[in-house]
Length: 409
Image (cartoon, rainbow, N blue to C red; front, side, top):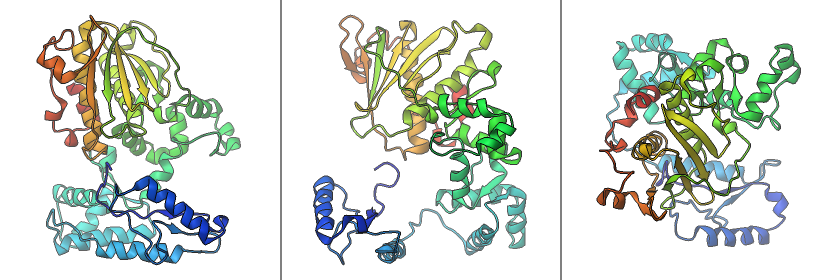
């Protein structure tokens, strides 16, 4: 619904032999039909079995060939939209880059320049434009917001997944080599990473290697998967690894709510907002001037001094598709809406194909009723509309790296 709403969908059912019979397949099919209804016309049906899905089993290959053949047919039928002209020379350039995938996970920018030179594509700017086109079409991965990212062209996306999952994982299930970790003196670092969501440079260097640490550190920063906690503590927060859930009945402070019921609140969005808040705080508030010691974050909760004197709490209500913001000092109410709205727009543009929908509600101080932010602006409701708010939608967010974006807030 968010990333590729018109793309064909194949539903695959695994462990087919455990279903033991065509009657079970039909029963599953009826449940699927009842669940999806007519809402997803892009679902590719299994016409040969007259099912909405493709039963298969990895043990003996049952149904695998049919799934593969169907996907190949879909891929051939899909036409590439002519959004941008691609010359034959660019096609040759791409082919020569991807030829290296047999022996390399990625190429450094210098190697890509040599490939370009061999077919007459020269100049850093032209080569980067080609790489950006290939990246936008999903043919390779190339990010250019920092020097470390600009120097690496990823031609095997699985390499990215494998390395990111060395940090973002369930440490109790997917274990590292504990003897090796102990020999490196990193047992406590590992426990802190997977149990509390905080990691160290030493541990990141161990899992990624010194050569690639800078690249993956910048990648996780830019994608809002990791941020520096406090400069004096030399720690990084990885919100997606946080396990402990904060349970509270009520917070008696002025409230603003972002309601995602128009669409839904995807997993990870709250953690990305949390990451931006922590990074913004690290930029704006010096450790020695903190009003109080920061509270360790929870998977669904963050209490932080966002800017000098500006303390807020974030609470995710995932089942209710809401993010609540509580402001200690009503003097910062208007500022809180501006900053959080801008952060949500940034996530929406960068990761949600601008399809994430939400409504903003604010609390009337006198009645404690929640009213829409649009109504509050029409009424110039204080303290939410005490100043002229900037609108994050007017910023060119897609071309803004995370550090520049946070500095601009």
